[in-house]
Amino acid sequence: MAVGIVLVAHSAGLAAEAVALVRGIAGADAPVAAAGGTADGGLGTSLDLIEKAVAAVDQGDGVVIVPDLGSSVLTALLVEDPGRVVVADVPFVEGAIAAAVTAGAGAALPAVLSAAEDAWRYRKFSDS
Amino acid sequence: MEHLDITLDTAFFVAWFEDVARTVRLHRDRLIELDAAIGDADHGANLDRGLSEVRAALAGWPPTSPIQVLVSAGTTLIRRVGGASGPLYGSLFRSMGKALEPPVTLAGFAAAFDAGVVAVERLGKAAPGDKTMVDALVPAARALALAVRDGVAAPEAFALAGRAAEDGARATVPLQARKGRASYLGGRSVGHEDPGAASSALIVGSLATVASGLRQVPGDT
Image (cartoon, rainbow over all chains, first blue to last red):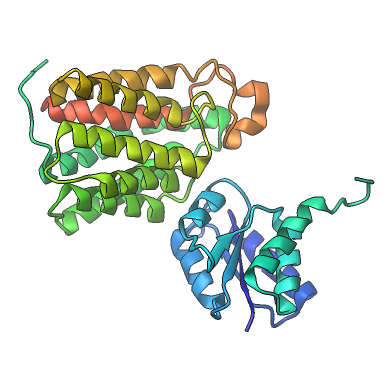
């Protein structure tokens, strides 16, 4: 059992590749799902795809949704279910990796969310 | 302007969404142009598509209460628009529906509309002056509340709300965007009307159109 992660992006390709990257780093078994683009393959956000992805990774320990921006964020917020399904306000790639690695280590929902939020503090090369 | 009062029944709310769908289609290209200037040019097309789905859903499953009309329309917009206006307008109508108590009076309508606008402000974390749909919706809610206070009949109250929303939308022209994609443009967002405020003015404007029994002539922009 582990916290599930859903990556929501404006493009299906971006979401799918982000999932592939996260699995590559966090482990192939990480419960991570993509919800990218609109239902008809365009750029945008689909509530249906987000709900399907949440259902696919929900093992009963909760789900963290990591959106990219704009309509992804607003649509993800509509499926929030406090204590069970939460939206992380974090950088997309860094937050997703931090969340998935922490979830893979068996952490509970608040710890996974907190790890994702720590991604704000990691500088890439400069001193903070 | 007729001052006869009207009944805010299920048929009124269905007619509202039919007129909104028709009006947004007429103004589709203008919304696209406004969005092309400071956004990603999809607002007119997204909203037009979503509202077509709203019309189809309302026609295929005749709702039996104003609440059902609003919640169904809101849910359809959330599911079918694909851009930020979907969850925002969806929340407006769903929250409005949930706050509505039948039989619907003008006072009840005004209070429910205000609840919907508050839901939009919360979801989008936007305030008046941010150059968003809130800049048209908040003045409309205020105009409705004042009309209720002054005992104005519904058709005139809706006309006042429509003008307040239009004025609010036009007042976004000199503003610098603080929310949404346009905010990335910084000072370059100044000088353009916000497309979300423009579509909000159309949505509110349809209330008066329906209430006065007027129909826009196709092609009239």
